Amino acid sequence: GTITFVEHDGTPHQVELEDGSSLMELATNHGVPGIDGDCGGEASCGTCHVIVDDAWIATTGTRTELESQMVEMSPECNPNSRLACQLRATAELDGLTVHLPEFQM
Ligand code: FES
Image (tube, rainbow, N blue to C red; front, side, top):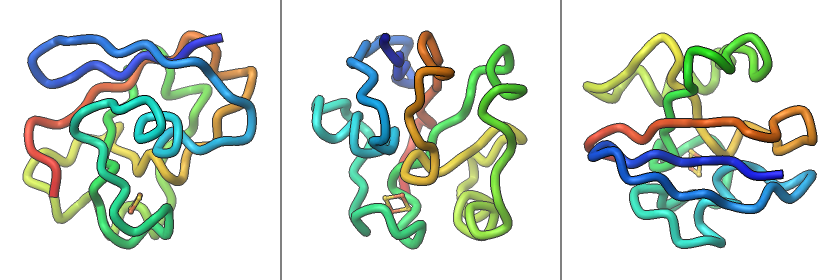
């Protein structure tokens, strides 16, 4: 399976879905630009902000209180904003598309 990260300018990056990794790990392992993961996945840096495609929000669910505290600091916070480090890649997410904000914190 694959997950697609779409840069703000529309450039797609398709990465192999590795069950059990976080989306932040998949993105950083594959060099997706715009996802830094500075805190290593502790939900405390906000550099892994992604916006889940509308078609997928029912599958991924919405963000937790902890994620909200981080992403709401971003000027690009969207109702579908999530921290990629808090999204676990599972087989269910095969084909998922997430969008990157223009500016990462
Ligand atoms: Fe730091 Fe996700 S990697 S908040």
